Image (cartoon, rainbow, N blue to C red):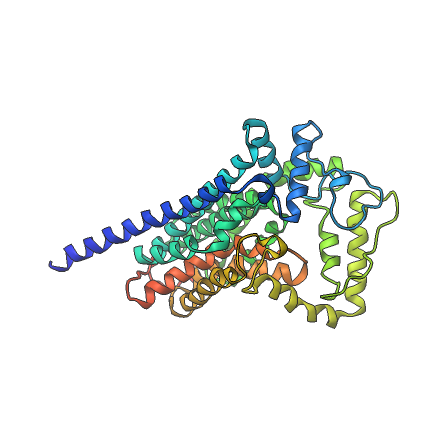
Length: 421
């Protein structure tokens, strides 16, 4: 009986720490939202294109990127792009512009709230899987990650993307728990996971491909029938949610595509590091889809000509994603390059610990799925290193589980019935 008051005291201490971490994380993000000006928030190169689309929406021109605002290779005279970027983030910017006198600050406040919500999702997930002290450790990893705080004051979709993917992971784990426990209503969590993935896809098109590794993981499980049923429900929810955008693009650009930027990204991934050759330009008058096909063909030709060389550059593309140094380049602002180390190394190291010591291998598989998937995407397509920040919450959960398990203060959330793998 004497252990009961001590246990209650420890739980109260852990809850107090969790409250302090959430408050501190939110305060840090809101402070930057009020300190950073709009010009600094829009420093990343991609911000200009998002803002241009938002202005087009606000002026009644629709979700269109004007030709004069297009960064990168010439567009071959195709004019404005209607499907180069997903509509989610430009619509957020346009809504802020329409509703607030200071739209830039409103967006940064919104992103601060998204960052705080991500922190809560991570804490809840880690606490459910391994107890309050795992939640404390996971929350601390995210709260004291300088890039997670700093990027909330940048006009890029990384923070809301991180919230959406954290929600996807949490809902998948919840569905997995229900399957492992034999519950019959797990499909609800699967459907919600599909909708959360749709939200992520409306921010970044590459998120849609997450269904492929998820399906392979379900196929490899001992509970494959029920997991594949849930996977099918999630895919159906995803397709229904994306249908308006696909139909719109079929009308606007002539093909039901998510984005017309894939060809150029694949082509850029074929260019050796450090080389600055003249980028191939499509013929004059080619339309937006034709330009994407043009770059896809050029990329395919380059890969077919030297497949070993292209594969050999994949580690460079992946290394750029996970390099511990600065990930913001010239737009890094006040952050010292060492911030990249304090952002990545503690979380990655503790995630490896969690992977090694946590006995629920099925859970660790789902927690690793988003980081593994974004790594595969960058192995194929060129992309910004900041993409890793959107999947770091899953690693923070795994790191928190590792700390709690090592300290003997964790708990196993799923009965060991041998059915989780």
